[in-house]
Amino acid sequence: MDTPVGPREQSESTDSAAQDSYDVIVLGAGPVGQNVAARARAAGLTVAVIERELVGGECSYWGCIPSKSLLRPVIAVADARRVDGAREAVSSPVSVQGVFGRRDRYVTLWDDTGQANGIKEIGAELIRGHARLHGTRRVAVATSDDELVVLTARHAVAVCTGSTATLPDIPGVSQARPWTNRKATDSSEVPAGLAVVGAGGVGVEMATAWQGLGSRVTLLARGHGLLPRMEPFVGELVAQGLTDAGVDVRTGVSVTELRRPGGAGPVTVTLDNGTELHVDEVLFATGRTPNTADIGLETVDLTPGSWLDVDDSCRVTGTHNDWLYALGDVNHRALLTHQGKYQARIAGAAIAAAAAGRRLDRTPWSAHVATADSHAVPQVFFTDPEAAAVGLTAHEAERAGYRVRVVDVNIGESVPGANFYADGYTGRARIVVDLDGGYLVGAAFVGPGISELLHSATVAVAARVPVDRLWHAVPCFPTISEVWLRLMEANRDLQEERRP
Image (tube, rainbow, N blue to C red):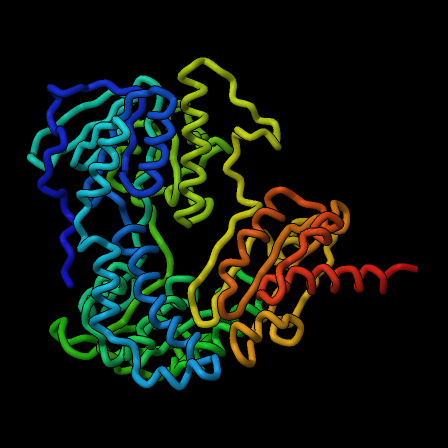
């Protein structure tokens, strides 16, 4: 469907008579902006939140929420078909209209009234319009009713404007009108043939979803594997799962040209190996661009269109702008909603401390630690099988100078609970152990239903729980989480083998 993305007709204040000075001004009302606004309000600071599209942002309407709404019915049917006695009850494919209806409920039909009211309920002011920095601690807002309002921040401005899908500069791309994540998540028509370009999270998830909805999907990866930022075995099993589902997975190929005469009808996709594909739509999931090109960065000595470098409290570095913060996608630390929300909590504490004239505690294990580091970033992709990881891969850990032990477990062969979950369970797990510190620096899982395992791994990596203590964290029988017991046993066995 064609979704409106302009400012909504609402009753929020858009005139300078209301107030022109706030303690904190937030650019962007997605999950990151909402969280930093909430933390600032909890500290008693006055807050204005400015949004040019829908309150809730990319995640709520074109990212995490709609994509998972589309994926869950597809995965649920696949899970049922892996269990004797249940597979016989699955006699039909998913109901396409039922899936789209479910998606529409979760995105509230692209109506942001509820989230807009949420901002007002915490005592912040929501202003609809396009915000641009206008010099030190100043923000100019072109409002939805064509007024220009100039606001002043007493303590901080937080840039939470997110990112946009990047389209490659190749011949025919404009005429072909390719999909990005937005059309891939808000469309209510199933293309007969869909080419998905990109092997990262968006690419593999959307290949899973649209194949399950009835498209004939071809996944095109420039590299030699899928999910290249995870352990290699994760991408291998995801590729096998996609292939088993009917996706044509092609690696080591690039798109060199698109042809769609008149901008309508089928699309011809030319690859660098000389072959051509003929599909109904093309989805590009090949990277993101920060939404910083038109927010007035030049007025504070920063480069328009750039990613913004920040310190561990998410304050922008490299300039004299100690009042300017950048959270979420725009700082390029981890383009994940949950990590952006974490950064918002950290930045909110930093802003509140500075406003009160307090020095923020930077002790590494403080409950209010001023860090938004990336050593324990978790990520899950809801493919079939699911893929999850936190921390460093084995290769990344070795490159960073760690002495590591890599511990692998075949989940289906060693975990009884996994086979109760799915007959003939196929999956793998890995932990990366720092031999000097005696704790985990990374973990990865792939297999049906493993997404709920990830938080235990995240706790272990983030808190640097000694492996000797993890031995005493007993998983329940019979669950997939017994993989932790097998990992601990395998680590012990490797340790014993290497003793003189």
